[in-house]
Image (cartoon, rainbow over all chains, first blue to last red; front, side, top):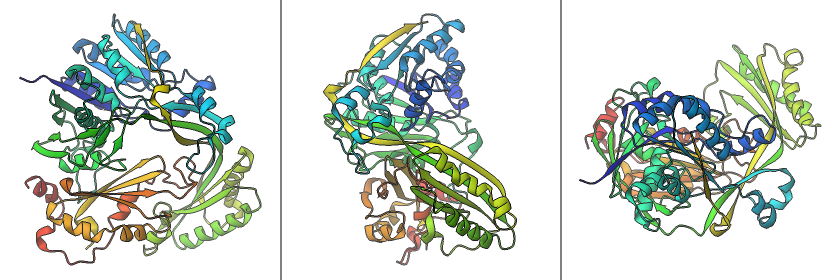
Length: 446
Length: 122
């Protein structure tokens, strides 16, 4: 019989719910539990926290998640893989080892994958690179917070081969977190492009956790999801030939069928024939999805071509401030009063050196814009939202103050003001030759 | 008939791109979606939200189309002043596209809760 492994998806973003991961660890007979916790901007925010001395730069929920799953994973020998290392994988590994010791879980080998931080390369070699808005990297260099390359599965495979029980990384391509255990268990060659492609399809389907099993799906009357409140997260049983059957724990909420799978397969994919990762250029176009039974889906047919010679780099930099205020109007004439509030705000804000302003009517046009909402009926209540960008916090905060002052200086019956002023962290993308990135692995033992 | 009756959708974002899938509930209605949801039609639907034509990818094996919307320059997800800076709500907007062609009964899914059951029996 072909060897099979089970990989569970315990988180789809840094703030994800923890209970479904515990349920998977307890009930799904897993071999691996993977936590994907690092959205594009999450790492920059972690780096800012580290720079400000607020914490060590790893995921704020690291300890809570590990506390919830470590004992069960230790008991069953389930290996944990996660990018919760964020801006400091080494500290995260150290902290995890410390936690394991304090829980009486001895001799756990915790790996930290390093090398994604390419800030020094960006400083020395990427000044001329042009970012999406036409500026050069050099022109924003003094405000750069972090620069990280997307590593592939290779250093994680190395850690697993060295016997790691827990592998903690910083920036790694999301699917690669799942590709690594397949390569390790099935001894797949990193240059077998069809295997890498199919493994990437499996990883892509799992990386957003509950989004495969009925999260982000329900549309009452059209797409109903049973027991969404107790949404279960998915796991895949992968065979050595790369075929995979996806399931969730019996009795958990949610829905896993052809429709949820296709939605997630195409989620965040630009060209389905050429999905670039550090491991492979994956081809999703010939994937087949077969319903095997209730909440059981077989997926095969992922293909691939030789990996790109470069790695994607995300550069995060501070880029001005955004000030915002909101105020609500309800009942008769609410929309007219809200529109009057906006015209008053436009006039009061026009001489304040704001780079850009935007005014929305929440409940009317804030999400889909003017054209799509033009024919909609007038709502009973509406919320005015004013937002502006400026180079300084002081100027941005004027937007918030002007919205608040609508209480006594604006139309009748405004209420429920909220305001905020925040620094913008902007992201730019560039490419680094793969041979300029040196990944490495360090270990802690509990 | 609105697209919502024949297809479902999910929106994703990657950098300064917004991806919107349109997936036929029934493979039989997929050719109709291909005929109706042209680049011009979808670009016009999102006028004011995009400043160049959408990209279209056709996936017959999955009875699905994907559209890629490019944000206007300087409206990247991290700088945008929009409430839904990621554009995550836009998939719901595409489902309101009115289909011009008459729709045969055999490509219409059954209504409401029976829809997914009927589909899974195919």
